[in-house]
Length: 243
Image (cartoon, rainbow, N blue to C red; front, side):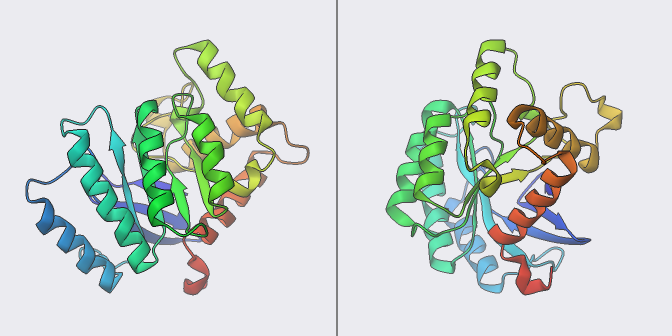
């Protein structure tokens, strides 16, 4: 499963182990950008969290966000530097995008910088994502994964959500690119009371949404969770930790 930490790192949890990713998010761009980028580069050299000592398995989340107080120019600079860093250190990349019109800009930088086999985890896919762009991503980068969480299961615009469900239903290679995540403690799925929301209930709610939407023969929520865990181990190369 994939769980958010409120500042630099995100937690990747599987088989009782916790790993971390580190990156500069578009809403938390520091004042001294170069100092923070240098610090991030140093962290990637060591590949261990300076706070917890846990292994770091990816760079991110990073990307663009139209609700950020920082300009798109600032965000693009920080994002591009982290994509370059992912290529240099051969580290998986975790992406965040809020604003459908920004997906293309992020993707074009990926195509320019990364080899086609680079592992990518595109975080928080929902009805407001650029779905055609994501199709292009999966075709171009075979080691890319799209992640569903509580924001995926509903949308205030029923027509947009209906189109999103159809997009999922029509994805012929969904299982090869599927990740289930929680973004806990944020993005509680609709229909789940906040006091009942935890990483386990969040993952299961997302899995049930995919099960009911994709209607893949023989794939229930439990099997989808197992498949997601396998994809997480693959994208983050967790086999090197005997996970």
